[in-house]
Image (cartoon, rainbow, N blue to C red; front, side, top):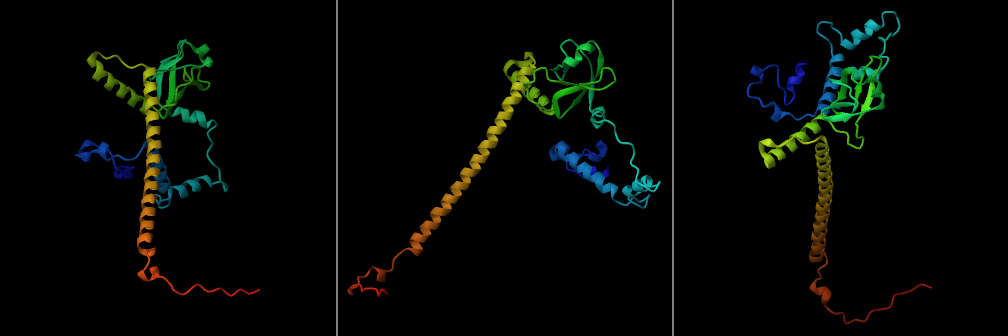
Length: 253
């Protein structure tokens, strides 16, 4: 765990150790990148000799699984998907006739009909809000998609940023009495921001291509100009006339 504090952007263990270090300014890893880094660090740990065990954790693990003379893995998870859902964040909600509202987004599925007025935990994936999951009976999760399935999949962070952007713009225009943006307005802004990014990406590629073509054109012009001046200029001797008439070439028949 100590290795985490060597990453740029660490918050360290407490404010005393952190001191004047600006974690937000120095942070450079996305959550996905950090997740990959963390998995690799675990792999390194498992294959590094432990000072108390005097062997690697992996070797100790294999020793425990080989006690009967054959490799016996622990019991595997029966349902890996539900096992994953168990670890997702959750919020408590009451299922209504309109479905479930979470983060001001409405979700609906016909499978909820028999569970109206039931309060249960709503599981959601912060990286993908296009659906949530509920387990009102304890017998299994029900997947519940957007009520309006035309909406794009968004992350919780993208949704929050769009709400903040709308709030700032409304405050500038309408002052402290500005109303909250609707979820439709939020998704519309997300759509526009994504289109802006795509246009910028496309423009950047085009500009790179134009710049490359321009560089090649300049190189070509410089090269040909050099050839014309240095290699193709005629000496004065080449311009003098020759009084002797041209002779005939011998041709073999």
